[in-house]
Length: 266
Length: 266
Image 1 (cartoon, one colour):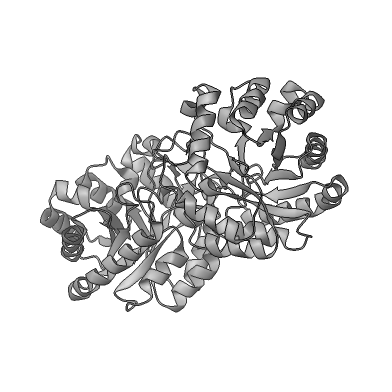
Image 2 (cartoon, rainbow over the protein chains, first blue to last red; image 1 turned 180 degrees about the vertical axis):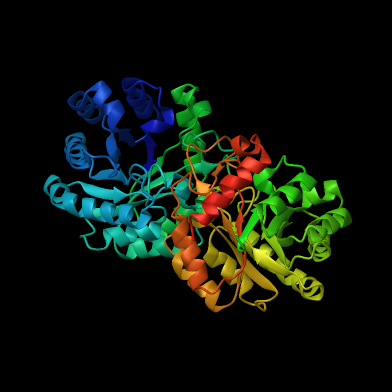
């Protein structure tokens, strides 16, 4: 169990204090948090709650969304929040195409420039930016970084302790180049986070809330776990699932199933 | 107008004889046909209708679906039908993962083996197999071939006049490697078909019927048209859109809008 982390988005409707108590009771050592939920509970109050419970914060989701006008202030605050919460990992989702733009190359260059602009802040705060490629179905409206290879290219100019990548099985499983990219990310010391979710069909309208708990879909999760370990990753395995059917269940039940899915990989 | 083709799926509810008359009236030189609709109207009757109208058949959709048990007979028949309809291009959608399989590499190897098995039949019939990569969101249940690079790898062992690739803007626009792949496909003489559709959001449930008519979304279609021409492609530009809102409109109106979208690229 010492490598498992519950990402808060998996049990979105579980109140944070109950989630923390549930994780402690189940022997879970870490949680991944989301900025909106943290803000709702209170930033300092969340930091105290989690620290007093003896839980680590494996990552904070999410910075990025560089297509928005206020991306710099937004991400500066996210870095500060990560620091306050005691996590060294801020997951970045790059954002999509701005407005009515069709210039995907330009949007990707802007993401690279924005991340470069944030590196000094990240270094000063001791927080690593973890670029997360999302599945290409999110390329237009949520994340122009669609492969691990692109994430590594954007990270390349920066020190590995400042900019890493997030390997999420849901987003990357279809890519035949992902195994080479994971190995390369490992050699560069850039694997900053590893998130588990399974691919299930049919996809729901809007496709955001279509993920399955580990073991319910068609992704060879064990191959990913083996690959990131072989690449030298020793951090947490975060289960991060968004699905209305999962959110409507009691948090403790979902946590139990997430843990079983994780243990099946070992 | 002499490079334009209307793919029948764009005006799915337009009866075939009306579609053919509408295309002739609009000066459209070619149509792309679908096996199910052809079977419904009658194969020989369709071939006669289209030929007598002076229309070319730019492609027949679709063969493939190699995850199904009867893939060989199914594809043999599809090749024969393409020959009967007078088209030299059979578009192949590879199919997804079989049953509860998580072995995506195995599924891709099977696709390569199946296509190799069909090459003699394709050569004998004078029909070229056009491997169509679909967007990675279809990887699990519809098409394990997710990039143009993969399609080219599968085509590589075979003569270019036997196995080509289909470049569809909807499926490939997110891929930063697609420009290199189009150029490579051109050098190999493998671009067998070029299909236009635009990317619009939000995606509908099941994601199959989410395409936009050219010009309604975020894809830089002009860049694709320029790239395939620069790669030596001189075949038809087929507009192929699946969307409930498009299907519910009169066929002639949709044809007019498809033609305008095509002319905007020139």
